[in-house]
Image 1 (tube, helix red, strand yellow):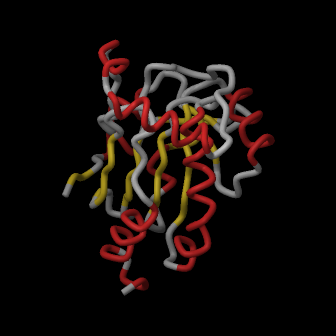
Image 2 (image 1 turned 135 degrees about the vertical axis):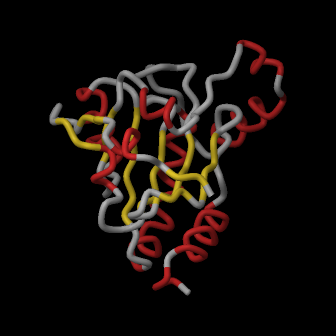
Image 3 (image 1 turned 90 degrees about the vertical axis):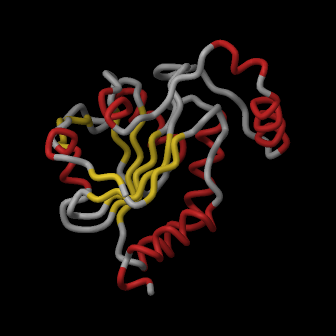
Length: 183
């Protein structure tokens, strides 16, 4: 199990209004399901938000919070909130230091040779999602993490390629394993 130390907890993120928030405050009192998005216009992130909506009531019933972090400007984060009306706190980290601290990956240009990229792209296109304007770092990959109030991180999914998003049942199972109320 990984552990997020005080140095990581003290990293700062921004609200859509541009206010600074200490990262560790997101998990200080309750378990947190933390989603790092590629960027705010990402076609795969739109699918990810739709998937997260499906499990949001169950995650909250377990006593966990959910937060999303992107890497564009606060204005881009605000537009994302308005466009997708996702009922969770959305933040941004333009410097991507949170991404680096959590080990989120950046692919080389060889990703275009990976068939998984095309399979993922076809999947989301068939579902009706369309790529928006890049709003952040287009080469940044995301991830999904569960962080406990003591800083322990028992679940970490770091995307290997764009569209590499863990299934909801896997996320819920991992959360049930670590949240006492869910057992």
